[in-house]
Image (cartoon, rainbow, N blue to C red; front, side):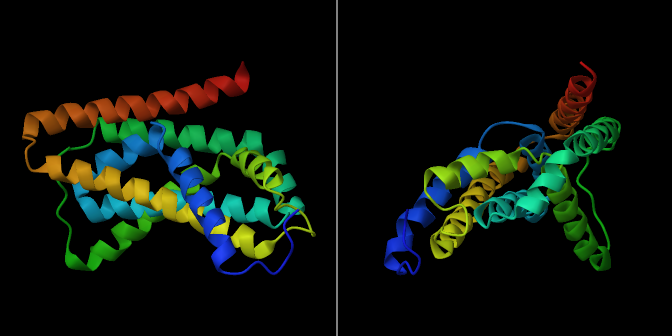
Length: 216
């Protein structure tokens, strides 16, 4: 067990480990990756990045709950797992269908609505990521393995690990959205239409899969 009062230098390994964990959690292709790619293509790099920040923030929130042993919050979330998955699956299905039939042309909104678009992108991705409370179990296992769970744990190291998770996840979305943004100008209307349809179908399929798993 690591003793409390870890120096700043000794927390660097935990920060780096957290960075790796954040990258590992964000990298697998899933509905959130598809959503960020689609938003980057349609609405631009900043909207895609803000969406990614919403995901990274949710990952960090679950990491914080696990790191500080907030068992009451974790228990409530896990007890509500079925409800959260139902809501998340339904939201993904509705979102996928909306994308499928929406105009894929880049949106042009008045300057006054730009801020609200960013807020909406952040909140929607944060909410969707938070509908998978079993992520807490992943963090609990990681923190327990590093001796950072419980009252005897090293909270400075735990904070460093959570910060690393956030940075790692954010770094992945920066790389992904940045790369997609470079391709954006090379895509014509026909390509954007097919990407839009494919994105909608894939996201809706993930929603259907989540809902089907609840009844099987």
